[in-house]
Length: 236
Image (cartoon, rainbow, N blue to C red; front, side):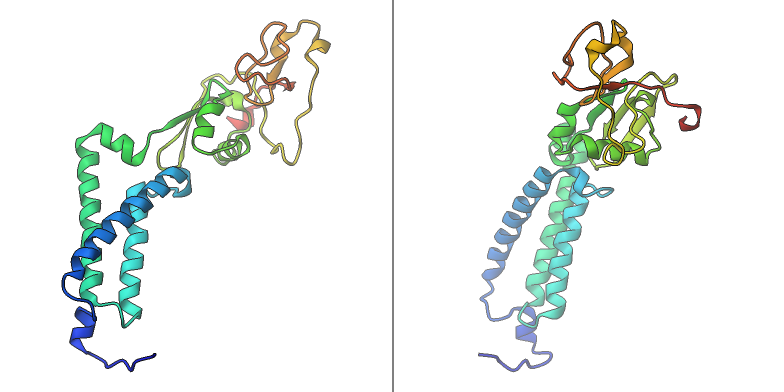
């Protein structure tokens, strides 16, 4: 089955054994695979690609595969690989053009930021839309130097997967996140034991401060409560 490879055999190097019309099939294959891969990565979410945009990330993957195969495998014709590379770059330039010219296209291609913390409260619906759990959000906040959710006025998970944090000018009572809850679990408190002191507890699910005599959180219906604290001076 194995055939001896003749070095610098130009017909094999440029066209291989396929007819020239196979170049059109390569065009079709590349476009289909590009769109399919783009859709899968878009579904996975921006947090998986960190600092690269979705288009840049896909460009790196596609070019790496196309370039690598043509370098190492003698049965991959150079013209076929060059056509794939050219198509990928043209698609990428077309997407860049759409992003620059249309806000709707930018949202569809790159996605949009998610508002995950507002006034010390976790927006669990927004984070779950990106496939992120509470523990992952809190870990990202700790990497930004946040010790207590009461320090955070707003936090946004950008389309790129990075986190933008805006600290409150005056921290409020909130849920402590240092040390991590996986290491030091938060204490649970029965609201009935507070005798009307409504402002000292926050929901363990979304960190909303308890108001009045409620037994379940008015934001997320959580029923577990923990003492709310104010961050000390060294965390500011």
